[in-house]
Length: 196
Image 1 (cartoon, rainbow, N blue to C red):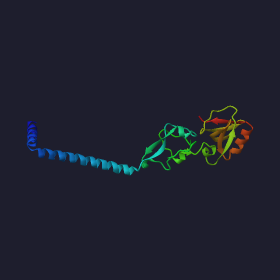
Image 2 (tube, helix red, strand yellow):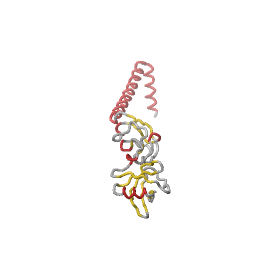
Image 3 (tube, rainbow, N blue to C red):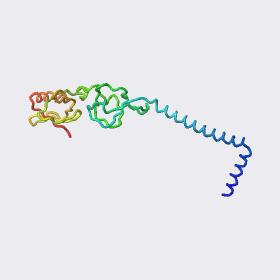
């Protein structure tokens, strides 16, 4: 340990006697630090370019259900291109709603968003919309699934609530089941059995 102290003492004395040697050492240390910093910045910039230029997309703030208006539950967030889904939503139309349930923090894409709260846009393909006034309201929300029964017979097991119109609940039902459900709805015999 004493040997190390002698080396340090000799170095201090040599630097004190020769100021040019001291400043040369300062320049070497500073240059080495600047070079290391420049390499780190270059590596960071290369990585940033690899991820792509950031742009603004809409992201959900909390979990949401089908049919929820997106203007109140989303915010713009800047993300790198590499993180973006196919067809990310960069502009939100007034009245746009969720086409299906979404989790908190999800980046919206075109398949997640309906332009308006229209029932037809929320209905699955191969279905028809039937309006039904419930004698005893089920409390079903847009996007909820269930069955429709009349006179003790199940008319369809695959109904989806896609909206409301006045007192009527709008249901999307399979094309094959739509005539029976519509007939029971007109005669006020239909009951919506909502999945829990």
